[in-house]
Image (cartoon, rainbow, N blue to C red; front, side, top):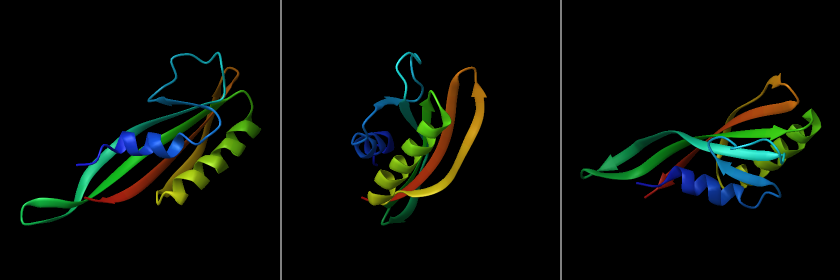
Length: 112
């Protein structure tokens, strides 16, 4: 079994902003990119051994203005797809006070 969170964190670590697991502890120093594992499933098994695992992660972008969300969203898409993640979904969420929020979902198959 692959730790999907570790794989996503490794991929996102090249971004030029703070990366955090699940949800930012505070919003004092934006922008922040957070991520978490949505699902892990076995995709193919043989001889009672898992050969291929599928993982899906949610990546959230938190920023001071919508243009930051857009620019960082493009960077997230570029680094994730370059590492063979497939974007399934991307959406701007309603603003919460002064914080803009974009959520994205990526899926990847891992050969074990």
